[in-house]
Amino acid sequence: MNLIRNLKLGLFALLGALVLVACGGGDDATPSSPAPSVPVVFPSDKAPAKLSAWNAISSNGTTMSHHTAVVPYDLSSALFTDYALKMRAIYVPAGKQIKYTTAGTMDFPVGTAIFKTFYYPKATGTDPKLVPVGKATTNPQGNTIDLSRHRLIETRIIVRGDDGKWSGTTYLWDADQKDASLNTSGKYIEMELIGTVGAPEAFTYVVPNQQTCQKCHATESGGAGEVLPIGPKTRNMNKDYDYGGGVKKNQLTNLNDLKLLSDFPGLVGAPANADWTDTTKPVGDRAKAYLDVNCAHCHNGKGNASQSGLKLTHEDIGSASSALWGVCKKPLAYSNTAPGYRYDINPGSPQTSILLYRMNSTVTGDIMPVVGRQTVHTEATTMVGDWIRQLVTAPSSLTACPP
Image 1 (tube, rainbow, N blue to C red):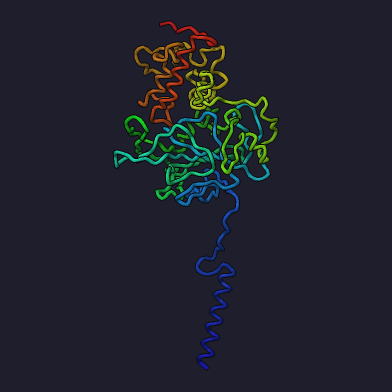
Image 2 (cartoon, rainbow, N blue to C red; image 1 turned 180 degrees about the vertical axis):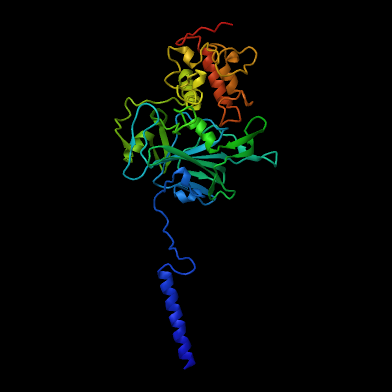
């Protein structure tokens, strides 16, 4: 009889446990939520602790990849950040579209998230106290990053909220490279840049805090107001991209094919920036594209450097009002001019042009841009120097400034 009684009690206990599990009971009374099937977009003030919660970027420690609903992209000419490689991608919620525009940043719908992952080739360093990273000058394309050959540093996200305003969030990749952790206070990472030629270069990589991000991204409010995307303009997106798997096409055409772009009239007549690294293009077009994406977010009529009077937008550079873009213009907001330097741009004389002097400096107070760069972009400064040198010849035919 005791055996039968014990069997009944055991059966009742087992049934009770099954009921608890079916109802989500037990120690954790909250039923587990299924993993999201599409990316999840968060405003910056509600950003989760881990990047994986966005379900947009994933990593197993060997390969980083984007969700299939996230579209990778590149820029014809991109912002320089201490030779970091960048994997850019856009997520547009289902049923919404980007409005095609020919001027300014593309008009993204509410709910859009733009992701930018910063990473470097792995390298062998000379100083154990520094993180060794490789110096690359060509940005790879595709939808994945091979982590056997690369080191992830950070992922920045900018989101357009329900109120139509943009907000930014930054995640710092964990040591095991399998996820990234929310970082709002910024961080300094001591690195060693290893190139194929030349000596290793020690520098401090700066993961920005939210205030730092605002300096550049508040492009229309003096560096203190609403943040906005900088790079994804139609003329900067009008280029081919290798999506992998044998798929290579123009980025605007691809967005249109995916039903993510509205009012697109086709590529005929669409504005296109030069690739500043393309030596087959006129040096003036290359300089204009580079200065626009690296400088114009501050150096425009409403940006953080508007008080300087120096405008370096794509529309201003090369215009008849040459003083606007620095020709024979004395700086209004810079007093650390080295001997022999009087003008932002002295046509024919890059060696006495303050613009190039500041691009070639890493000294606080002299360096320009003032954030986002701790190393000299040697290839770009050479190109800008060539541009300034030829400004005295046709078609510009500007004259040198008074001594």
